[in-house]
Image 1 (cartoon, helix red, strand yellow):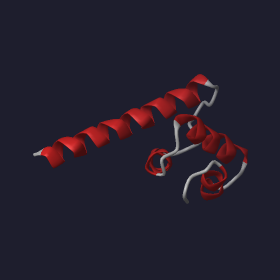
Image 2 (image 1 turned 120 degrees about the vertical axis):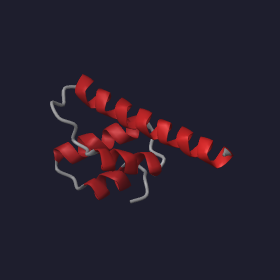
Image 3 (image 1 turned 45 degrees about the vertical axis):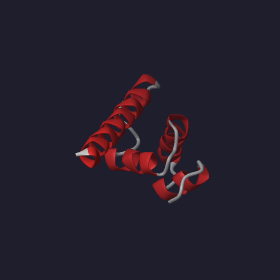
Length: 77
């Protein structure tokens, strides 16, 4: 039961992270997020904070590959 509660809490954190990132992209002028949900989740799993994940999105929007953008912003690809 404790494991299930921790699992639910982790998923809630992941959903919050994804929602926050999608709102940030929209708030800063992106008509569509430059990262897919699975890419945002990868940033979350890599331990990137919101600012670094936003940097990944900006780099991807500029033409970098997702994996290179994650490496440049301090995450493990």
